[in-house]
Image (cartoon, rainbow, N blue to C red; front, side, top):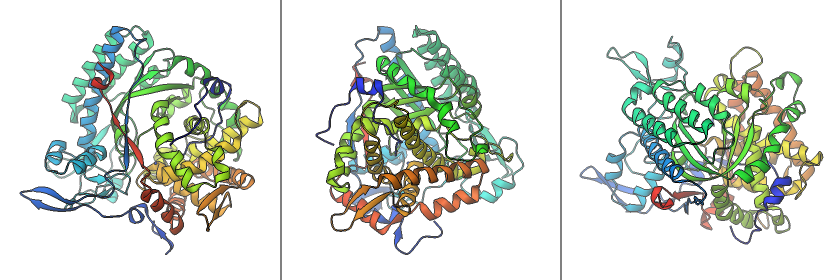
Length: 571
């Protein structure tokens, strides 16, 4: 993405040009295709020779990731802090190996069996032989379909067997389901299943804690080290919420549940090592304070907005210098909203981490080229990094809005909606982020740009995230929103030019009605309703498939991949 205006720190401090981020089918119409079908071009042709796949023809998607080097200015850090970063990266590498185990299995056996360098690199990016941005389609011949439950459950276990299993904690975040010697299901806690690796990572965090001069960060590292070997993560989540001024940040451990596509219960191992921009973060902090007020104004019945977000929520900007595990698999995260623990959220809120160097890479390399192909020329002026940054930021802020517990005693929304919860939650954050921006513009709290910047950038962002595929929660959420907006006339399509344009008034109406629908589904814990929405709206129309094919033909990257590590940072 070229020829874009530089982001202004002063403009951000006043208020950005903001909007919700567009970050990840039984009843298909005959004119629709899934991501898997519409992007299926020239699969790898392989033959097994001496048990090794020999790539005979290049897989056309091996080049869909644009390389980007993760760096940051470390000159303001002390020798101890630089040493600490090295220890955190080493701990992250252990999380990376653990994610390989649950996502695929024996990493070295797979990689050593692939002779083609591009195919091997593609397997590294995808943490296995399945293309994560193409509906987990195998790109190595002879490889079977990926199990929806990854390695979290026995391969021969059915959903019915699990649902009828009388076992406390079976839907817990931090355990593997295995079979005992009698063939019966039983739980195996992470702390036992991965004891050796987690003990090593715990020791590295303890060493890093000894180098920390920020007491809140030191406490977090010590509690997180303990959590890795006990599976008790809530105390460290609480401590993480108390950190305000530490220049170095690490998010590490089993966190998101996207990899468990069978039930959405099990958390996957992940790591981010980050360098905080303290000045920029201070300027962003004001926006979290509007959460309670905006919660009250949500376009939904009162019973769906009774929960009030915690008041300790904050916003911070970072350069990310290391990704590992789940966060590094396939599409890369550019903003974080944590912790996921509903009790912590209600008690203290959440923290939103904006990964601005990774965000800038996606804007330059992906979003602007997409806009140049699909957005009408007269609206391209509204594609700005300020708006993209704001869309992403308020997507994360909006995770704190809405409802966390069902209104009829079904428990948490996440538990009630099972494997559909992630896609609907991402859709909620997208649409409520846009709602927040619209409201803040009305209040005069955003003093730069115009809301149309956010609307047009939001539309272009849908095309970017839909390309993540049906197996991505963000991709699925964007398919739903694209089709919903299309049905409501939120954008127009010119068949002669192949360009899209935003209809401001109808997009505002669609934003409010979709917000109401999603919040109602979540509050009711309506699993069947969410399934119906995802199955009917979460599909790729023939026209959209053609648009995505055009982006592929123009060789616009789908996402980025990173050159990173201690050597890159000079450590």
